[in-house]
Picture (spheres, rainbow, N blue to C red):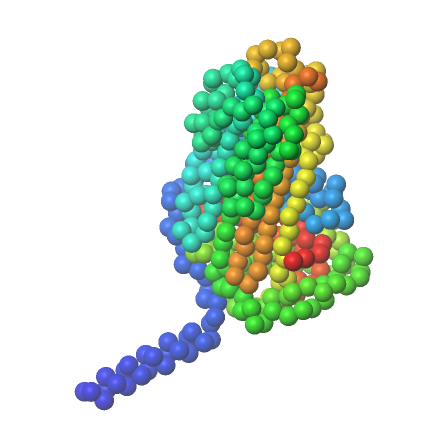
Length: 418
């Protein structure tokens, strides 16, 4: 009997060792049970938000054709969502429609932003994801109480009055952003606040996720990366192999790398050789994204992916005007009576500043975003052969969550730098 037991223990241990050594990356990470089913309105607002996100990304990428781009559509839409609560008439319509929320009531928009914040922050216990909102008012500037109450209730916004004429005012606001992004974005408003600026509405996002299947740092090597003009540069190229969600056609390869228990992931989209990244981005719509994610299947393969770190800053004034929000920036026609009813102030959006940070390495990804809206006055097992994906030329990346399918960050990388 003792001999039989020893044999069973030996066989069990041997089988465990074989399974572990043959499958570094299991077929899929353990999934959290969905916290609850999404409502029809939530699905609608997420789809609209993603459509806005891709349009925003395309417009920004077109204006920065020769640069790396990394934005957070979620951060921008939340900052503008708070701003929407102060807009009136055609100004309200222009912001709502630009965000893709036409057809939804103000209450539905606010309620869905609130539920989205709650869902995202509690989605994965192994991923740090934090959202913070704030409203900063010039001291003695009268603000409608309903505007303050609404943004406190639905966006959990901190509301503070400051003497904007003091140097400490910008320091206070920037320190708040610095703390909410874990030191990754240290400045969002200028050192000297414009005397005509009455208010800042600010969103801050911080994300830190560890790859479910980490890259082995001993496999990272210096290799060549081909730039858009055909020249080559050196980058730190990571390597892994295993089972991943993967899709491929004559235009691109795409692989999905999960974080934590798999609620969040980064999808890398690599245009095929000869496909220009800027042209590819220009045609990458919400429908194409949905098609890509539907076509992904679990496949075994080998991936080479560069390490990189990126800080990005962009004024979105011109971008948002091109997208249909021009009236909100015009002192003569903008209507923000739900912030302050005094029409002689000519309240309008004077600035929309967006800053992001991302660091991708063998362990995972750390990313942050901050968006400031300034309100001014006065003027299964694989059946195909293993894939091979070598990300050695410009590519797109999308960080998103698999439960709500909301876009957290979108970027194009022309040159990976550390």
